[in-house]
Length: 432
Image (tube, rainbow, N blue to C red):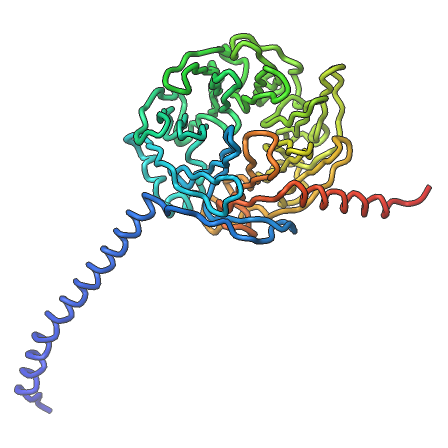
């Protein structure tokens, strides 16, 4: 059967008419998608003007929750600071929203991509910035392997120091509690990096709020692996330094001269491998950062007698600790697969008297579907300071939370929960 040449010609003419129309439609759809994506990326880069706090429930607690905020700490006026990627936000006392303050630079490097939420989510990397802020807006920050300084009420940052050890496969540069402003205004931070070659590690100091830096103390090669924490003792003029990771590298020490001289209270075992201290008037408390099941736990060091007491055994490593306004001590366990862990749960550990400790399950390790989820710790990150009426937590890599959810729980709620749990445990004990 022969084809009708007229029909073929009509089909060809129809195609010649339709094809340009389809091409134009595809082109305009593509242009619209590019425009929408560009607008979103610009908005994401600059961040929202405000991030709302909303009433919620987490870990069984009534709380306030905000999305995509990494807790930093409280300033001297009681304002809470947090970061969303490279952007700093401030929550004024009694307010219900975090307000955008400034954009911290990264320098010219691949770390500039952390300005975008999609990169942070795919890599599970919301911990981009560590900063100290004053109420007037003066800021000292670490970002992209550099220290940055912003003057009070200023608009721009200036680079003041480049860290010698920072980057992918090298290390974070500074741990969240490795940066502190002391009462006399001195800022201290200690290097935190993988240090596979066990080279020297430096403790830096600044007397002018981060505009210039000096090496206050130089740990010789092989002495320690890195610095876990530099913290202010709210009851004395001392600063405290914690190091790790091997037995001989683990140490807790204090300094009264801005880091020039270190005075250890203990070293040489995993008992002294610590990431954050909690201070009371009578004692220091900490949870161990160790997978050694026989050592892992919460400890109390008496200021008067120097007596060390193990308060409770803990399965797994503990990174975060703080003391709240009414004396409640709170710590948290992380999950990263060490042999001493009994499950994949993160937990809060709460003590109202420094003797009895209540444990509360919070989340489950590995909550995201990215290839990074099993390589990143599940963490409940706390504010770096002491004495607040609220516990502030950023939830990282857990099934029950969006990565970077910020949660505020009042001390009264925590104390009530701890009292209830301890009372139930007391009732369940057999009568002797």
